[in-house]
Length: 233
Length: 370
Image 1 (spheres, each protein chain N blue to C red):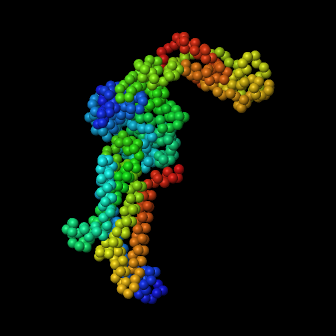
Image 2: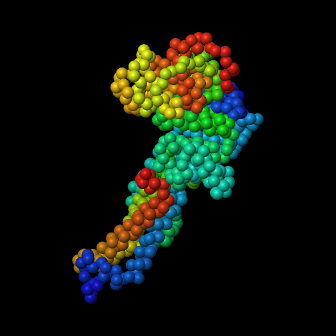
Image 3: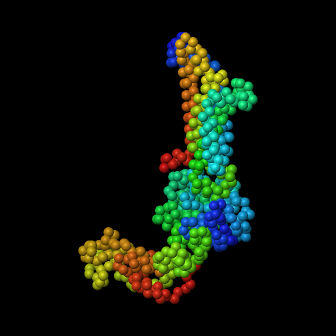
């Protein structure tokens, strides 16, 4: 960089210099942020699959399932982070604190997504699959879920991206991730506002979210060659 | 053979969909279930492969009680074709067709070879194999649906309104090909439709069901048209059933009159003594092409061209039905129905009143073919 003493400048544009000066720490936080965002979505999907399947199969389960998951989503994330350790008997700042809280949100979002995805399978296709002799489990994994991929993938994009922003909130209560940059920015703003770590945190969060989003879009394309065939008719 | 033994289906809300139905679908034949909506025809069909479980009664598949066969195993041995084909949108055509072989554990190569054979058999080009269902038209998808049902060569096929979602021209074509396939394969088929014309065209026997799931009449198509058991069946079979019944009366060898002709490309003959002025035009193979109205177009001595022809009339074949003969006479611009030999060459002509005379006093003829 051109600036010799970049970390002393408080201009928002000097986030890059700030990054270079604290590279090891920032990269570690980026990595923490990455898996803290991803793992809850993966676990959330695994839990949401059977719940979504149940609420699709037993129609009366769907309305309460959707209401409960909607309510869970209205709990502010900071409150949930703080509540998790006492409720589960963990110590404060336990490494499981963030994954557990975010898994709750991911499940809340994905149950509905899975149920709607399964509902997107045309009735005659499901009927034909039963009639040719698929048993229940193979019907789900060989026919229904592959057809539900586009709907479920759309839900995964939302869950992943919102997790990136919620992980950052956990950073402000002391968990190690990119959220710590916001905390640093606040602490360094002693005489006046000190922007570089805050802007750096925003930039890295956005880049991380964009990367996840692109990966999911790409993965969906790989899994659904049949949808492109329709467009190219 | 499929046999319904006092089958009843009552839904929890008390609706009776099927009411103590006794019915036998003989091996190697097409049994059509037909009736208005709410007559339980689809419910009856789906009870055969246990997509719906009967409330009481039993369904026998040859000497086996279907209720005692595990559902998935039973279904893999029964082909199933539905209205919109219900193809798997995420699989290629070839893999759609190979579905049941895969489920039965055939190796992939054998399953695909078999699927390719079937595509050919139902009249689809080989390059469709790698396409996805959404790239095919409705009629083509329906052919794939039939191929999928046939893949593991099941002795029994269930068909639920398979041709009713395609346009009339394609439907007619699919029906004809279906009959051709069946004449080669000889499956035991139960076919559901709401269309009485389709039932009469396809069925070896037709079961007419009335609302509430009761069997009104089980008969061959000809019997149904000639002797409906009651007002409901008569009404359902339709008003022009007398005319349609003629389709099942073979005319035998029609005695036709010789028809003066002119060849396509030959000069229009000068004043013919034929009073009505209609002259039949044939090609070099002696196959009828259409009618020429003398004095209407082209001066004497001009060459007969395609553009001059009236093509209104249908053709009746020697050995065909009385319905075809009457239709040829009624649709002919000259009033004389054109009859051709089996190979398409002109045999002669006859008028509607001559066909009517045949209907009133049938020629002595051998037993009609089954």
